[in-house]
Length: 314
Image (cartoon, rainbow, N blue to C red; front, side, top):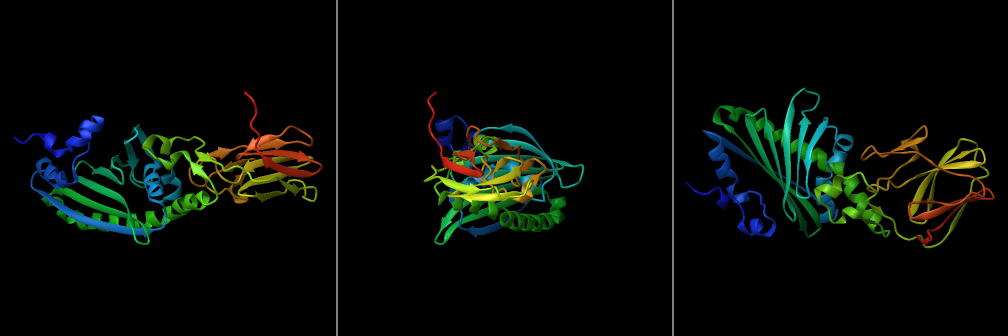
């Protein structure tokens, strides 16, 4: 019998001690696994202008899916490593649970494997590629089952075509937002993404230095009024409360989502990408400064002063 090791790239085994199945061996492995197998192939391609690293991060960032994509139900994350993740995902509103494996098997490519009710296996190969006009997301899949279930394949193939079309269009806002912020000097911890840092609910935005100080008069604001204040290359949501003000970031420090006044719910700002919630920081007249989004904020003489952050001795 042929050794199963030949189904893997020996160079990857030597490099990291682990490896993913070779692309050219997927069909052969499925044929060994499933008696009287029928395999149906499908393909989807989506051009775009996001950077390749943002396409990679976007796929690894699994926490955005329930909020950005209506096609996802609840998911239970079972395992996350730098190069792979395993989840149990509920199928829409149905009480059916699907095991989903994601693996980053090459610099620009992923495997995503789903098993439907123990009867149908879907192996998806996702590649982020460059082309003459920008970048492109290429998705190829193999639907495999016993030949008696071949009538299901065209239905699943159409479903995968629609799913990829809808989700790539919904993801454009996330991908392009990162490109936009980078032109303003922003960086991200996830500029070199892996499954661990892409799913950590941490402050992954590295704000650029503020070039100069800004002064925003608030004395004319009515009590309880909230406005978005844009200063330089960053912004804040500000509400006047008597002589004091409440301040929230207008750029989510997690991954850079734009937060607007409509994202305020009472005293809580909720990120539209990942559902993170932020309470306000309070500034009082002549009180000490607070640091937010890489700048210092002070309330003096009815004006909000936004200044470059100073490095304080430790």
